[in-house]
Image (cartoon, rainbow, N blue to C red; front, side, top):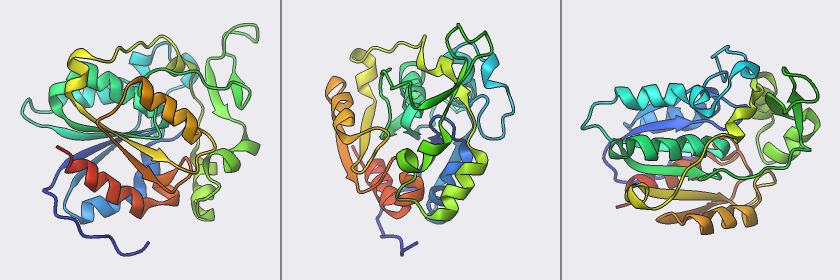
Length: 247
């Protein structure tokens, strides 16, 4: 990785939330460099993700899937504010935290992330059907032959190999049964959206639509695919530093 650009920012506590199929492991490059700059970093596994061995087919609600983040936010001191960072579908977890714990969030940073529920194409997923093939799917994982093209086409080969070993199905309940409403108190939390300009999974024009529906206070661009924590970690870190300083 190239030398980190120096920026004068005070130390913050950053909390990272992964997207679908991923886990805390995907932030390993970003975490190590932010910690070397003096920041405190927490990377969470949501239910059935990463090293949490819960069966995604048994998770019946978004609240259950999101409980690790909700518990983490609940246990923060009343006077502690964090930088909350979410990737892809992890953005729903950020919005839930804004709704429930807005007084504990300094800035919420959405990395090519869903700020509100949205429809996704279902033909790219392998579906788990614990309730029967005639019932809605209970878990989803991107078809293996699409993972390189949609998620990792600009990533180093070693990160593709790592992901191929660690990706796990995620609960289909993540995509349903959760409702958020912008405006009011939710707009009191500053939101920064990082738009991935070479994204094949969450195309830039679709990101623009999401941004228009609930405009954040700042939009930043990154020359990256859907996985900037692998393909452009230094750019991503610099944008996170910019987001931290956003007032």
